[in-house]
Length: 176
Image (cartoon, rainbow, N blue to C red; front, side, top):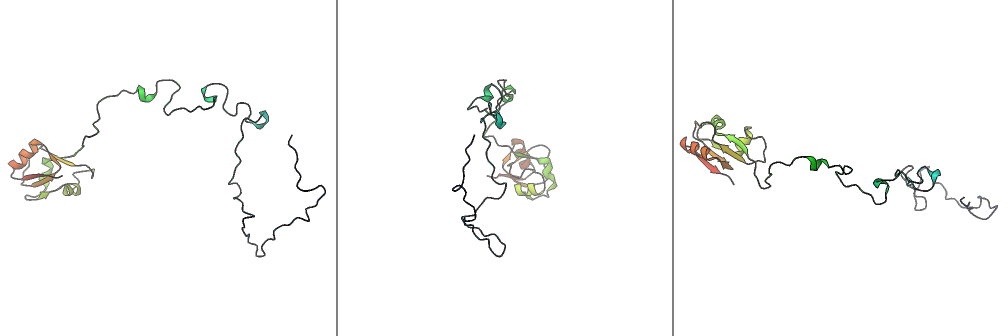
C-alpha cells in the first residue's frame, strides 16, 4: 500500500496559504509559476509488467512464449517466419544495364509533315507532340521514306536514317 503524504502539519488549515491573485480583467496571465500544457496534450506512459491487477502484468502484452515475446526481438523487413521470402521466390531474369540510355524514337516517315528546307530540332519535335517524355534524348530511325529536304538535328541517328536523309538531299546533325 502506498503511504499517504500530508502537506503541512496536522490540523493546519488552508486559509493561511498564499494564492496568487487573479487578474481583474478576467484574462488569465501566464507567468513561470503557472505555466501548464494544454489539457489532454500530455499522456502518461503505460507501465507494463507491474502485476496482474494492472491489465498489462505478467507477459506485459507480448503474449506467451516464442521469438516475439523475448527481449531484444526485432524482425527484419521482408521476414516471413522462416518461409522463403517473396523477393527470393521471384525469378530473376535478364540484365539491366545501369549505364544504358533510353531514347525517344522518331521515324523518318513522320517527319514528312514539315515543309522542305525546315530545320527540325528536338524542341520542335517536342512542340509538335512527336516525343512524349521531354527529358529523353531523341533518336531518328529510318523507317519509311523522307520526301522533303530537311535539316534534322537529333541526339542519335540509325545508319539507314542517315542514308535516307542524305539521299533526299537533307542534312543531319548530332546534338550533344
